Length: 318
Image (tube, rainbow, N blue to C red; front, side, top):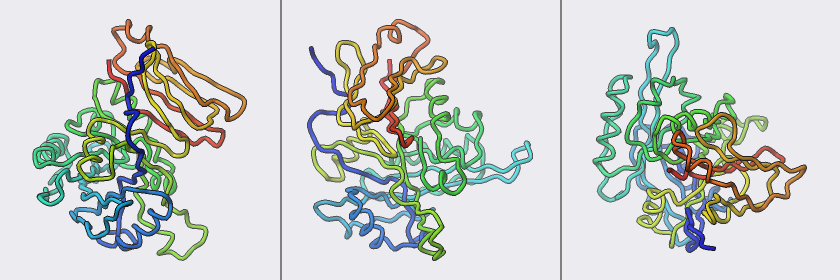
C-alpha cells in the first residue's frame, strides 16, 4: 500500500500566526513584545502585517523564531447601493523581504480595482491572503470574483471574539465550489486590546487560530516554498500529524477528536465519523464516488473535538 503524502512526511511543523498588528499601526504591543509572547507560547513564525505599513523586523530572528515581512491593505465603501458599508482587507507577505516594494491599497472599492492591486502584489513578489470576509460584510459578488490570492482566512480569532464572525468556513466552501483554487489559514489578527484596556474581562486575542507549516528547516525560503505549495494545515485546537492518500482514501492521523467530516461540492458532508468522545485518531474517507462524479472538484477534511475546536486541511483538487 503506497501513501501519497499531501503534507510531506519529512520535515517539521512550525507554528505560525500569519496576521499580527503591532505598535507600528493599531496594535498595542511592540514587535519585540509580540515576539516574546508568541515564542513563549510555542510559535516559530510571526508575520507582522501592520495596516498599510511594510516592515521587516529581521533583527528579531533567532534559530527558533522566524519573522515574516508583510502588511495589510484595505479599501472601504460606506454605501454600495444596498444601504450598508463593506470593506476588503488583504495581507501581503513578501517572498523576498530584502527587496520588497510597497504597493498602495486600492483607491476605490470595486472588484476590478482590488484585483488590479492583487495582480501588482503578485507581480512584485508577494503572497496574497484574503482576510475575514464575514467581518468585512462582503457579498458573493465580491469574494467570488477575487483573483490571485494564495489563501484565505477560514478563521480569524479577533473577529470571532469581538463580533462573532471570525468563522469563514462557509465563504471558503463557496469559493471552492465556484472553482477557485486557494488554501485556508487560521490567524489571530491580534491587536492586544486587552493590554490597552486594562480590563481583565476583555478577551485575549492571541493564540486562538494558527497555521502549521511543514518545512525542512526554519528559514525564510523554506517556509515560503511550503506555504506556496500548500504544505500546511490550520487549526483552533486539534493537531494533524499526517495527511495523505492511501488506497484511494483521503486520510489523516491526528490528536483525539470527536468528529470528522469529508467536505466537497455536494450538499451536506460527503462522509463523516462521529464518536461519543474524543477518541478518533485515524480518519479515512473513500474518494471513489467523488472522483467519478463530474460535478465534484475538491475534497478536504475538517475535524472537531468535544470542545468544538476545529482543524482544517487544504483541499485535494480533482
